[in-house]
Every structure is written in C-alpha cells, then in structure tokens.
Length: 295
Image (cartoon, helix red, strand yellow):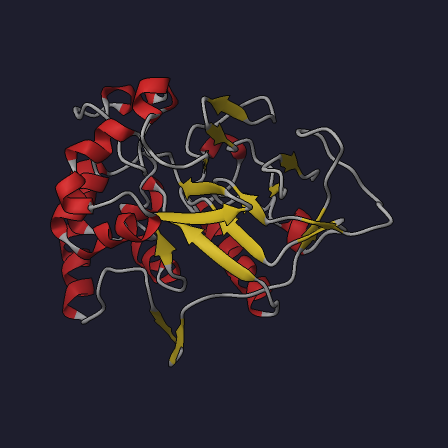
C-alpha cells in the first residue's frame, strides 16, 4: 500500500527533504560534470561544427520522462560549454505513446547519474509534479499525477534521493534575474501562501518541502489540470494561468519552465515565461536568449 511505503520512509529516519542525500556512505550535495553544446544565430535554431566554443550561462534540460535527449549534450559533439546544468524535473513516468518503458526510464536515470559522476560541472535538479508524488505522502494524497508507477515506487524514490531536488532555482545574468521552476510561479498562488513562504525567492520556495503545510501548498492544482484550486503551484500551474495580471509583481525578468508539453519542437512564450518542454536541451546566453540544441 502507498501509505505503508511512506511510513517506511519516515521510519527509516530519512527526512523528506532534498537539500542533502546519503548514497553509498557518502553525502552528495551537488553533482558536477563537463558539458558543451551547440548554439545557432537564430534564437530557436541550432548550429554544428563551430570553430570557437560558445559560452552559455547554463544548459537547460526540460522534462525528461525517461527520454535520453540529454545525451546530445553530455555524450555528443557540441559547441556550447557551460559550468551549470539545470534539469527542470519529471524524470520518470514515461508516456506509453513514446514506447519508453518504466524500466527503461530507470536505466536512463542510472546512465545519466553515471555520466554526471565522471564530469566536473554543477547540476541543479528541479522537482516536478511527477517527482513529488513519490516523495511525500501528503502531496501524493492530494495531487498524485497520471502514470504513477506503484510497482517501481521504491526504486524511483531511491533514485530521486540521489540528488538534491529543488522547487526553484534562481540565477542572475548581468542585472537580470531568472527563475527556474518546473511549471512556473504565478502571483495569486504566492499571495495565498505569502505567510508561509515569506518574500519571493528560490530559497524560500525550496523551504516548502520542510513542512506538511508546504507540501499541501505545492499540491494545489487548478481546474485546468483537473484540480479545485484557483491557481496551481510551481509544480502544477498550467499555461492557461499565465497572463499579465497573474505574472505581475513576481520580481523576475524571466521565468524558465517545462511541464506544459509542446508538440512542435519549439518553445512557447507567455509574457515573461518561456516553456521549453519540447524534448530538446537549450542554452541560455548572457543576453537571456535561449538557443535550442540539436539532437
């Protein structure tokens, strides 16, 4: 039973937090690896075989769901290099229509972890809605996502505990502030939980995983995704909830998200929110331009 699984986790003495993890007798707080990838002149196109390495502020990987497009950056011949890799969440629960089995998704994660352990770059792992339902019972009760894998729940939980998972990550590029979450941050949801969160910041959003009330807030889903809340959380907000009013007063110049799957191989922009969930990695330049990396 699902409740028994979470009870075992709690009784084990392992906190349901994503700041530190214990693996094979060693504390891992961050993973590092070497990466380079390609960039093109057009913001949404690609380039190969450039003579000069291109520097990116970071390389971004949208929803994985067992897909191996990360290999085009970590194992491929790329022209971009960066010290920072950001993964936007949803690492398991593959789509049956893509012919990726749950077992293949587990193997894909293991290969990714093995690749990162032999590299020297910083990796940031964002938590998605398809990750959170394996990590906290209160969240699972309120907002379990589709394709939840009860057969492999413990395998997935153990793998997710191999890395620090974050609700949000922020980056300053020049004088511009960039916020990374799985789905996005809208002001009405924040306003409803302001007393719990405090000022808007990635660190304060990350502290939501330290309390039951925080997990309950993260489990809020709007009617656009089958829920009953007025607005979705940064793990759940739908693209239809993005508008000038809901995005006002957030305090970031740019939000970069996944979650809302796109079917035309191109990112989508909603005001100052860019959704990258189109099965491609992206490079973020010093001018805040996003360059799609060819597979």
